View 1: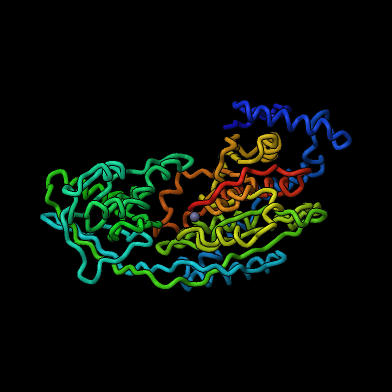
View 2 (view 1 turned 180 degrees about the vertical axis):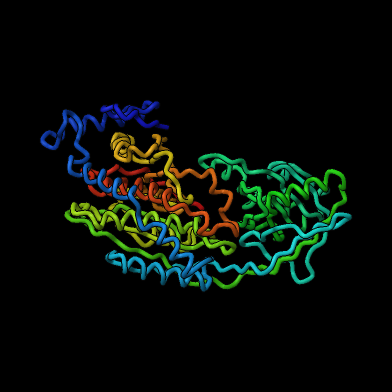
Length: 492
Ligand SMILES: [Zn+2]
């Protein structure tokens, strides 16, 4: 793993491993042999002074106020929730086509994508016994329903997915498993990665041991009564059981009751059901480059959302950030030499259908994708700039970060994922830049009915747009590229 070089360092960063050091030396040797192309001693000039000045002006322009809030507001007001394959999803595709067209993007087009179609129906979770009461719950995305008759059974609490898989079938058979693990609040949302497996894998782990249903503590940080949905999956070989989440306060209630009543029972009812797959689409629009128009800097976000809220943060904000960053660049006098391509992906939430289809359809054009960036963690601001580029280009990433100042953005690692929708592209070898957004408050509302426009702060959104616009503009004007990553199989 490589760390960023400090801003003052002019030399190429050298990796901790000997292979990375060798690569860095090799890169230096290649540059030394390049002769006439060299500027500033042994280093290629990544950008002209005019490019850097334009990036600075672009940043200042964005910080004065952008139209990003207006884009989110329009999406959630005119479309609202847009679960993959739903009428809202279809409306979102139409909205995006119109919006990109009106904003002056060129080559506005769709790519048809087949998406799974799941309907939530109604959810009822009731605590039985002496303190009987309804609990605030959500059916997890992709769960089967319970049937009209519902399910009533005793509850067994476990601390984590690992604790569940270590249990014996005798402890769990014919019971409801309750995974009670709290997601911790962190600035970069890292705790999501450790708790989300309860949601994705819990039902099959419990089903394998003979449980009749799964209930988890919401994978979210809110102390309010908002249950968190999100995708779950079934192992092919495991019995399928319905899966629910409880809001954090309701998970507390259940756990407290269980301390004094081991026989406690729950009644669960869900009318969730799967429908045949439906058509959706990726929506694409471009800001054309000048002399290297065939080369692409990709800005991605996803157009679909969960059904409970309005998808204002997830991922209306991301859509607004990338659309507005590209729009601001299109208004510059000094045009970028590469094309900036905005891709609004279909169905991220239910299995990355749009991202996979985009990567499948690009064919040889993948080699022309110079850098890809995604926005999918709310409004921001950007707190850290991570990347996954060929190590010899980390100096350029550092200069991009410097161009974002005075925004207080730290340097980060060079092993960034770049985001879910960039996975298939990254696996083809496309380098990624990953502006890490402040997610301290994001997981309070993510995937809940509280994901509404009320949580979008226009000023913060403008700061994020400023960072994305600077990065996209510099990537689209840079002399030379960011190298390529080693291709790896994509399995998700
Ligand atoms: Zn998202």
